[in-house]
Image (tube, rainbow, N blue to C red):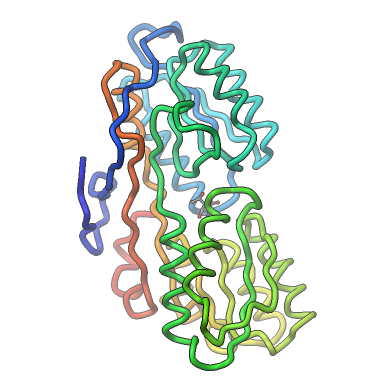
Amino acid sequence: MKANKIIAGIALVGAIAFTATGCAGAGGGGNAGGGSGDKITVGFAQTGSESGWRSANTESMKEAFSEANGFNLVFNAADNKPEAQIAAVRSFINQGVDAIVLAPIVSDGWDDVLKEAKDANIPVILEDRTVSASKDLYASWIGLDFKKEGETAGTWVADNFGKTPTNLVVLEGTTGSSAATDRATGFNDAIKGTDIKVLDSQTGNFTRADGKTVMEGFLQKYGSQINLLFAHNDDMGLGALEAIKAAGLKPGTDIKIVTIDAVKDGMTALSNGEFNYIVECNPLLGEKTAEVVKKVVAGESVDKSYIVEDQAFDQEQAKKVLDSRPY
Ligand code: GYE
């Protein structure tokens, strides 16, 4: 499926636009095991439940991989512990599932277990984030262009604040995750050569609690020198909001805030003037992933990657679409 545009304001799961790249074979498969009649048994190794984005993603996956849709889903959430996630994938291999869907917490460290899956003839489909392992160790990736998301955020910041000296702090996502690494790269490229100075940049692990704690530290250290916050997701920005308010400053005014995801709480903060800009990251990947898994298991060819198109919102745009947001 090829599509280059997303219709603004769409509220339906089925209306997500994808761009697909590189055609690849099905990468193994065959309805080898699972022992559940003609249903496809899928082991899904989710990261954990760190954010609003993650909740929406899990829900979308569970809905798509339902029994009514012909699946028997074995769900695991690894609490953002990479070793636990590797163990979950290994256990799926031992159970002889028909396919494994993996939302990798971090990019590195997957080579061995992906080889084990391949040797067992169990196809692996990546969802959300990517891995650094060789592309022939997985059949397909359904995800997002994180670098472009970072670039979009950085370009907005550069356009609006790049010509006056501006002090920026950054709340990074999970260290070693492709989402955090690529968003940082895209953002840093976009603000290069501007008057924006990065005072500090630390991980808040994509969570509200850590976003708050790390922002408290930034405020203690730099106080009102901070003009701007870039948070790699809404949740860390929302945690930071609390820290900023507690410090007697006005979020969105005294400290401008740019985030990524566009989940309901983030979009509400944007509509209320407490955030200034959000780049969307669409979590509704379930339907497309289920479609790809079915094809791979049936031995049909699929593209090597399916990338969801994201939008971006300023405060006025957020007000217009807030009520129609599906997550
Ligand atoms: O932005 C964040 C979540 O990998 C795209 O993970 C995902 C990121 C998302 O925890 O909120």
